[in-house]
Image (tube, rainbow, N blue to C red):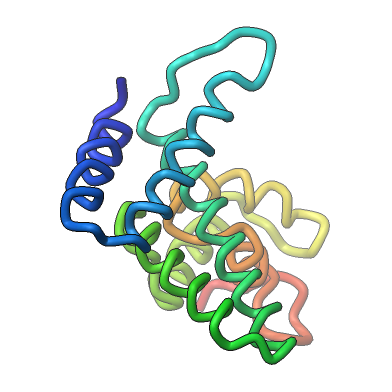
Length: 157
């Protein structure tokens, strides 16, 4: 069993004992999502820590999007509940890259690949994605590769 999944189970027990309803329901939901991922596909398998992080990141993104939808609809209490759950999930995720760190990684990848135009974006993304796995969302990475508005591919400084 992965160390992260063990930590989730231990934290679930601790949150139940301390009667922390938000942490309890969030960790239960996260463990359920991990279990669903383990049995998806043709055969059941044990997820690695990296795969568990991907599942947790996907769940955190769902919470962020739901909070935006609820707040846009004027449902403040539900939006706050989603934000609280997202905060619990993010405690288990690696620290997110700052914009400067992400730009540095993208600049290195552009220089390494020799990319010159938008048609080379895929090559750059292939280099960048393994380096930022779990530490930046795909949309944010793609935006960093595209560069500032009006520029189709970031150019190293």
